[in-house]
Length: 131
Ligand code: HEC
Image (cartoon, rainbow, N blue to C red; front, side):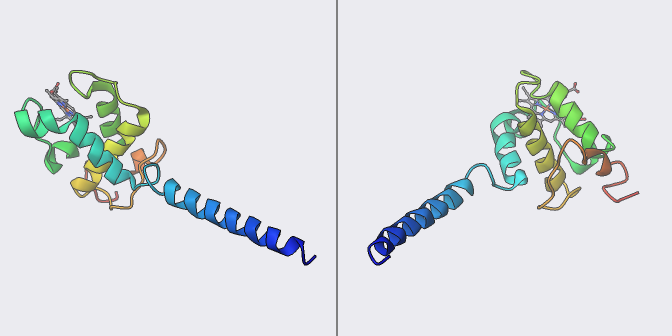
């Protein structure tokens, strides 16, 4: 027993280090808040037309209100944007960028997570207020 104890201690220490490493690396890219990921998507794929060159409509709260629900806004983005490469992003990137727009224009809180299921529950048509 006395001879095994140091070995076990080392093993426990290694397991602890591995667990911490996994925790730290796991918290980096994949688990960032959706809105943050979406903002990055927007900067990379949408910003140029919508905010720099003015080719795309200036996105405002009022413009987004015409989409009625987050599900429609998602569907629009998914089908028609980016204008010059529609449908070229992943489903997850479309969810993320749509969530970013919802948060940015006050339709959803910063910790809101848009999924395929809850988009129809987020109303834009009535100014973001629940019906
Ligand atoms: C190459 C330029 C370009 C890029 C890149 C682009 N858009 Fe657009 N966007 C447009 C144009 C042009 C329109 C107007 C389309 C129309 O009316 O048929 C538009 C319209 C829209 C609308 C509807 C606005 C309205 O008036 O109803 C939304 C929402 C939108 N874009 C979101 C995005 C998102 C999100 C991205 C990035 C994933 C993106 N766009 C990337 C050019 C662009």
